Image (cartoon, rainbow, N blue to C red):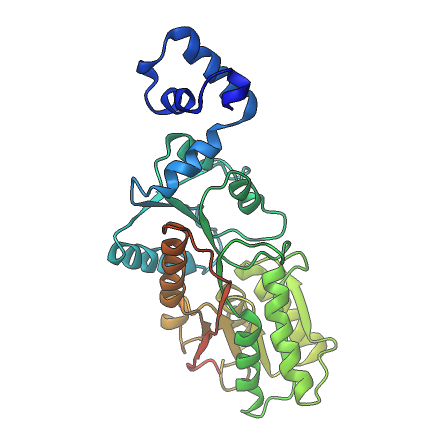
Amino acid sequence: MAERAGVSRQTVSNAVNNPDLLRADTLQRVQQAIAELGYLPNRAARNLRTRSSHLIGLRISAAQEGTANATMDRFVHSLVETSRDAGYHVLLFAGEADDPLSGYDDLLRSTAVDAFVVTDTYLGNPQAGWLGSRRAPFVAFGRPWDAPEAHHPWVDVDGAAGCELATRHLLERGHQRVAWIGWRKDSPIGEDRREGWRRALHAQGLSSAGLAARVDDTVTSGAQASAALLDDAAPTGFVCASDTLAMGVLQTLAARGLTPGRDVAVVGFDDSQVAQVVTPGLTSVRQPLEQVAIEIVSALEGLLGHPPRVGDGVLLTPTLAVRGSS
């Protein structure tokens, strides 16, 4: 940078931090070099590491219509509480729905936050790579599905273990034909959860053939998929990738005059508030979001320490909240 502008390193520092100390022509020359070399992200990363704001940035998305998913609400609340105890505050920001990077650049340019928490880790999401290339500290809630060699810290919940637990729960209650309703193949989270269902069936010598459906995560999709599976495969139990899909199964059972938990068992995933209040109560896999928040804040403290410390990925095991539907 200094060589490109033909000035000393101290002059570059003054241009960034104390521009009033420089002559107009010198400042213009350094600013041009900054623009040409893309130095701004590095400056932001340096300022982030000073923990000058004690703010953690978290991008939030609009609620999905037609779903029962309120997982992020519980997670955000846990993150806010845990961050406060560690001396930080969470800064929520929005972005354009069709641009996963919008909102980040503004905060980096203003150095308004010390670090970020990234929650969208689906295949192809560019946030992790974009932040990493700018050396901006961040921790991901979710595994780097398309980059297993990635070195950034992450915290996730073992969805496969959760769905294996749910499936074993039904098998232990005498169900031999347990169906799966999950998300489409391009969802690594959904496929991971599906693997737990398949693993539990195969461990008991049971076939999973013809017992699975992959659909969009809506109540309507869950209802349609469960109706088709009941007609074609006659399962006595369903394990679903989300409470949203499980709510669709409950709709189908009600339409057919079947009682959840007596005629057909149903298990969801996420233990949403809907699962806790719907009749007769939806059995659901519960993510330990409070512990997720604790691990994320611990990883952030490591990143912002002196010297910085990059922790390993943390995979947490969920539990099963058993209710009347199973």
